[in-house]
Image 1 (cartoon, rainbow, N blue to C red):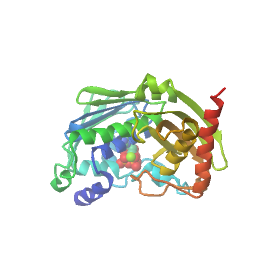
Image 2 (image 1 turned 90 degrees about the horizontal axis):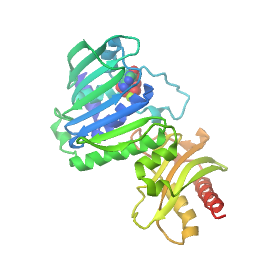
Image 3 (image 1 turned 60 degrees about the horizontal axis):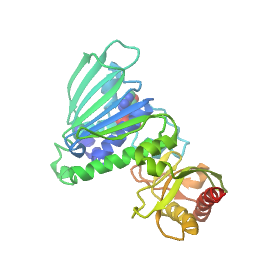
Image 4 (image 1 turned 30 degrees about the vertical axis):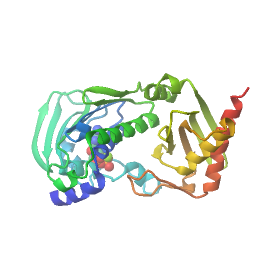
Amino acid sequence: QITIDKIAAGEVVERPASIVKELVENAIDAGATTITVEITDGGISSIRVIDDGEGIAEEDIRKAFLRHSTSKISDAGDLTTIATLGFRGEALSSIAAISMVRLTTKTHDRDYGSLYEINGGSEASLSQVGAPNGTTFEIQQIFYNTPARRKFLKTPITEASHISDLLTRLSLSHPEISFQFINNNQVKLHTTGSGDLKDVIYHLYGREVASNIRAVTFTGKNLQVTGYVGNPSINRGNRNFENFFVGGRYIKSNLISKAIEDAYKEYTMQHRYPFACLLLSCDPELVDVNVHPTKMEVRFANTQQVYEDVYEAVHQTLKIEEH
Ligand code: ADP
Ligand code: MG
C-alpha cells in the first residue's frame, strides 16, 4: 500500500504548490471561512494549512488517509466532477506517502480534538488533544523518502511563487473566504472574506489597480461573463494580471486573453496587457473540462463564439465608460 501510494503521489504531488492546492481545496470543501497557509523555504521544509471548517471526527481520521477514500458525494453525471474534485480520495494518502504529516483537528460537536501523525505513509501516533474547531495540516520534508523526485524541485523562491499564484487564484474565485499566506514569517497575501470581488482585487493588487477597474456583466450567445477588467499598463510585460475562471475553475486560455486584449486595443490603440478577472459560465455541453486534473485547460466546442462573446463583453464595458 505504501509503495502504491508513493507511485500515486507522483501524479498528485508534483511540488509544494500541489500539496497546498489539495489541502486548501479540502478546507474549502469543509466549509472553512478562514484559511491560512504558512510555508518556509518555498514549502520544501514545511507547509501549514489552518482552516476553521467542520473538522474530522476521531474515528474518521485513519480512513481519510486511505487511498480512494472520500467522504464526498460524487455525481457521475456531472461533467465537471473530475476537474473540480481532482484525484478523488487520493490527496491525503499521496501527501502522507512522501512527507511527514501532522494533523490536528476538531469537530464542533466534540470537546476535544485529535492529533494524528503519519510519516512516509506509516502511522506514528493518534491521540486526543485540546484544539480549536477546524483542521490544521502540517507537512514537513516533502519527498524526504523519494530523493529522485526531490531533485526536481526548484529554488524556494520559485516554489513559493507557485504557491503565491495558486492562492491568488483561489482568493479571486472565493471572495467569501478570508485567505492569508505567510511565507518565511512574512504576510504575503491577506483577503477579508467580505464576499466582494472588488475588495479581493484591492487586497491582492493594490489601490492603483482596484481604482481603475470596470465591472463586466454580459450575456452572449455562448457565455455569461462577469467580473472586472482594468486598463492595460505600460509596466506590465506579460499576462500575469489576466485571470479567467470557467465554472469557478481557474484556466489558462490564449483565446480569451486575445479577445480581451483585442477589445482593449480598439480603445487604446496599443498592444499592452490589461488587468482582468473574468468569471465565465456556459452550458456544460459547450465546454470540455475533462482534461488532466492538474492542467489548467478547457476545450470549448465553439472557439469563435467564445472569442466573440468575451470580446463583446469587454467592448461593451469600455463603451459604457465613455459617457
Ligand atoms: P477527497 O477530497 O477527494 O475526498 P482527500 O484525500 O483530499 O480526498 O481527503 C480525504 C477525506 O479527508 C475527505 O473526503 C474529507 O472527509 C477529509 N478531509 C480532508 N481534509 C479535510 C479538512 N480540511 N476538513 C475536513 N475534512 C477533511
Ligand atoms: Mg481532496
